[in-house]
Image 1 (tube, rainbow, N blue to C red):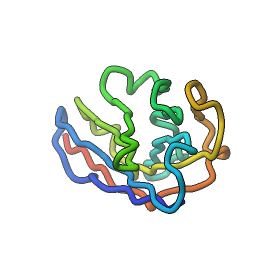
Image 2: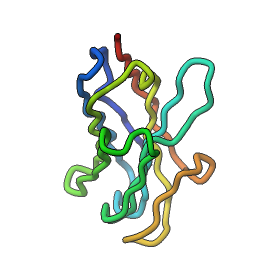
Image 3: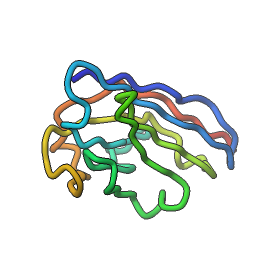
Image 4: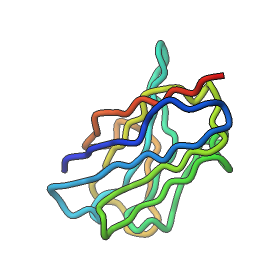
Length: 127
């Protein structure tokens, strides 16, 4: 599957962005999806993940209440709505796809479990 991420940009502290990741080439519902980010000098970290159905989601504690992951099977797209952005959220954001798992319940937080990755989209939050 090919993943194309978009929606990054420059935003002020407290602002919002919505990232999109469009999948092509395979059946979208066969894949659990995740968003990761990597800031300069830091390791890649999970942000949020979602099951194949979209009914189960995971968020890192620091993102809970600010970020929302969702998916639209009609558009083969997974989204990351980011609100109340902080300078610490500045990073390159990547979407990723994991083939298989339970349709309703399985999501994945370990980057090594993902099979496909998008190219990344830069998010910069100014103070």
